[in-house]
Structures are given as C-alpha cells and as structure tokens.
Length: 67
Image (cartoon, rainbow, N blue to C red; front, side, top):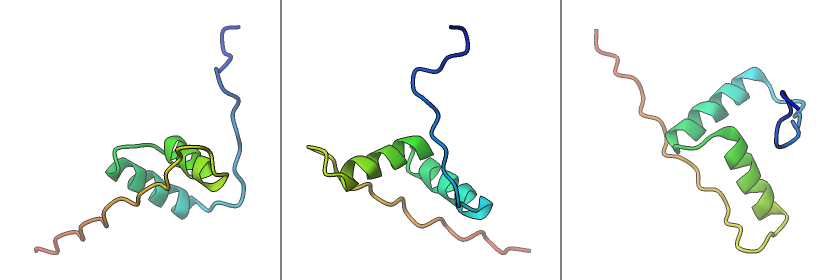
C-alpha cells in the first residue's frame, strides 16, 4: 500500500520535550539518530548476540561568551 511503512511506528510516553531535544542533539553529535541508538540500547539490554552497549557522544563544547 502507498503509505505503509516497512516497520510499525512505536510510541514512547513520559519523555519530556527537553529530554527528547537533548537526545536528538546527542545522537547528531554521534553521527547517528534516535531510532538507531534506542535500538542499539535495546539489543544490548536484552542481551542479543554481538550487541554492544551504545557509546555516549562527547560532551558538547560550551558556547563562547565573547562580546
């Protein structure tokens, strides 16, 4: 069918907007995306063969306060 996705959409509840935005920024710094990192964590968590714990991205650089 025309608008059918290959994978079903999974909803997450109880995640505030700030956490969701911060997670998005962190996954971008890691050159990844939220879905890939959540999937990687879940595979590690349930002990799938060859699954590795996701690595955290580097801490973001603080903005320069030059005026």
